[in-house]
Image 1 (cartoon, rainbow, N blue to C red):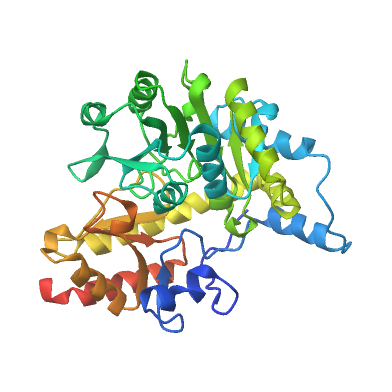
Image 2 (image 1 turned 30 degrees about the vertical axis):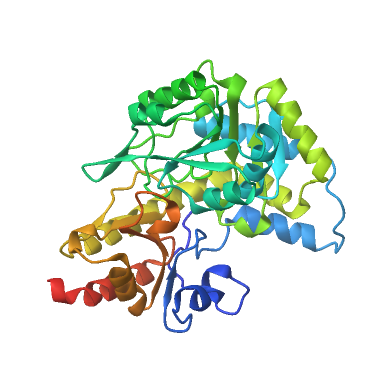
Length: 390
């Protein structure tokens, strides 16, 4: 089956955060600008999701969600067939998105003042939640080696004080697009064991992996279950982030009981729309759509890389996964305020690298999960904005 990812959909005025908030946040008009910041896509959801939602809407009755056996089975099928990971359905919790799931983990597995480790630069929402929860944010910078992020375990070991209780892994990495290797994941697991840390592995981008790379779920490593929390969702993969529905999967009985207690105390229950859409997404037809999507995103990635790397001093980090280009402007010799002004002045709203923590200061993040014509236009605008360097 062929899918249309090329038709441009006008999202302005549709309560789209990506388009309707860009002027307030970045000074870029949605009428003339291109939105390439927050991580949602400009493509309609997969056909099975749309059919399931229509089927739910037609009776006009929207009550509490009941039997979740099909929903849990769909998650287990997807993780097994797509990732080689056998999931116990009893280990699955449904939260109001993964940022909510992460916040619940901080609440369940640490107390105010405890250290929570981020491998920076990394997804900016983690920083916000850690600080808001009154935990100590511990930044362990990734090493930038030949334009690619690598672990720096020895330096991280030297940083530890014993106050740290949680290690956060972003796998695949956002914003660097790394798909961590088996050896790297084993090193992270060893680090967590050595310092007695609960390891939270955010794997929300695990379905968006480009040819040549292969994602390995942290849960498939040996001897890590006693301290592991996995976070997955349909939302990034299928462009249904508005459902605010995610899964926290906890293999260990002790950790699972602690998390369940916090969910019960806070009165958290599932969103029926999100669960029905997720069950429809995690299907053979949904898998076919994802394969087509990744192929299209790969083409967009190549266009972005080729166009931005043609600008002297600009380097787009080679991505192995995600649809988020991580572009380094350090070689231009410009201050962040200057290269950011040029990009936004060209009518492109992008995420500022400094918000991702230490190591992100010279970067901007470009979301290329949009129609190819807009990627082409964005590249042309950026090239024009830096034409004096040519």
